[in-house]
Amino acid sequence: MRVHVAICGIGFGHASRSLAVVRYLLERGDEVAISSYGDGLDYLRSSGLEVNPVRGVDYGRAPGGGVSVRWTALRNVFLPLMVSQQVFQEMALMESWRPDVVLSDTRASAVLAAKALGLPVVTLLNQYRTVLGHRNHPRAASVANGLIDIVPRVWNLSDRVAIADYPPPYTISSRNLHMRRGEERRVEFVGPVLDRGPESYPDRERAKELMGFSPDEPLVCVLTTGPSAERRAFRERVFAALDGIKDLQVLFSLGEPGSSEVRVNGKWRIVPWLQDEHLALAAADVVVSRAGQTTVLKSIAFGCRMVLLPVPDHAEQLGNASSAESKGLAVVLDQRTLTPESLRAGVMRALELDRRPFDDYAELTGRLGGLRRIVELVTSLGRRGAA
Image 1 (tube, helix red, strand yellow):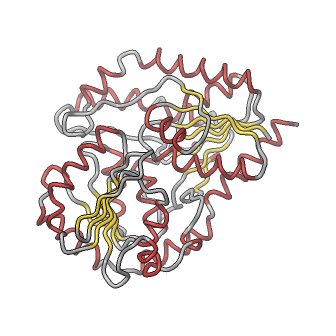
Image 2 (cartoon, rainbow, N blue to C red):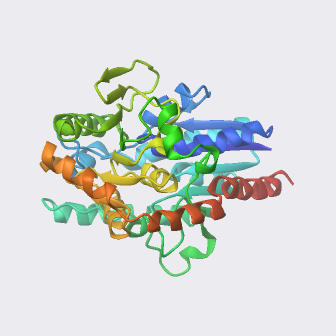
């Protein structure tokens, strides 16, 4: 089977979950062509894959790393032209390679290209209809939301839509998954997409030992994720507050692929990149991170309590963080007011969260089998496309 995989390149989240699907397909002997842009392109290439670069799109950011409605509007003033370029690039790739099926991870242009060529398409999402909110520019946000509402019409063209989240009432991204009547008929909640789940790793104490930490003390894993501007702001804020947990074991990933330098400072270990992020999650008692959906779901799947610092004014991340907190899975802090004292208080509160919700999610994670289900959907449509 020949599969064209088109991946959103904003940050690492889409690329990391799609990488699991790509590796599964390659290991079973399928042929795969990949397209992406931005951070996702770099991440996939650093994983040893050949990736076709396409025109990128992104949102604008304020100097502190938060979402800026003004800069988003300026950056995307020619958005229709940019999307059209993406569509034509994807069509050219598909026409030259002739796939049996297309897998789009949050790439509207790939869906449009696939349908224009009569190809079946599975779309992988964690946000169906995102609402942009901004306290300083409510009118601009309202206009932007009118434009954003065009995107679900594209998702509706897909043959199947797989939501990389837990089904209701366990859904984390519920604020970003509002669907109108009839839109849900092609939709299936498949759960987190993991190439290896917690069952593939030892218990937390042994995982700490394998990571070089004491099994008898809590381990805080700081994961730097997202686009470069957001990673930079997150690192600066957390580093400035890190003395608040200087007595705890800390594994701090800077989120910079391609390097292996390690710095050790007492109980802290600072690494540019985690070669096995899942082993780190298996070892961590608490994860400190942004509130990107992929990182949040991975942390939940591995039973990690969370301290979340969502990107300011980022509707999707604010929704994820609020949902995780309401379900007893996380403590939410504001990066703009983060101090050593507030970081310590957040970590201590997280360590005291009840384990029962995590046990429920662990059972659900195993039962859903997100990666397996995505591959089943792709395979089913691929056979139809090859017939």
